[in-house]
Image (cartoon, rainbow, N blue to C red; front, side):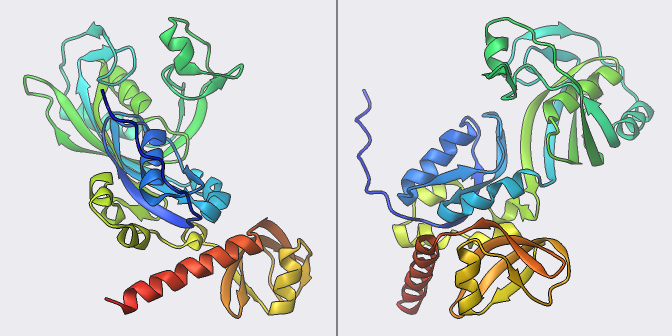
Length: 325
């Protein structure tokens, strides 16, 4: 019998951890493990990965959770292996085999399928997914043996490349990389490609190698995080405003910063912009997001004075730790 996990004293932690999610854990399980290791009070992730999937999973802590939605909309890039000739209930190796067919696929057919599935396409979401129907996740219906009608959704595959062709082996398969829009199901893409090839398919491996501007080379594993002391773990966090890459920047003096933080609009010589990150000038600190229209800075998601103070204290702690090295 496992001993109960020791209770830890939670603390305010702010920033973004780029986690290389391991196979076998749900995104939430990986999040809770990292949250426990950092002793963080508040945390969330920016897009679910299946338990059988690995790779880039940005985790948001503290104030960063206010901007996590912006990253949910980011493009993603996946590397996947699809086993040809076998269909399963779930579209991946976790499900039961429902059909086996002979595989007779040519290089020309592969090229045609890549062309067919590059660009705007429509997908029917899989039953084994977290999408909700009448307040219940689709996978709950699926586990109960109930098939629910799902509307097709528009997604975009910006790039699709078959990087390995194992069609003529004892276990025929293809490896592919897909750069796609939010909401794309790679399991469904693999199944649909298999159907177009006339043999069916299911995924045997799936790895997210990029999400937005974040790449797998920037990520850290839970195993590495566990081996660190507390200061080293905190040093792995990226600043909150890493989630605001691509935003314009507006900097306010102390008086205007205080008014902006209270939710008041400010006037200035700024061009119209849909998305800007707003900072206080001295000391430099992120205040939140806004948009600019007709010279008015209109507040969006704002940090609280408490969060700003905690972020500054955390930064001072980093500086102190670095000076002692």
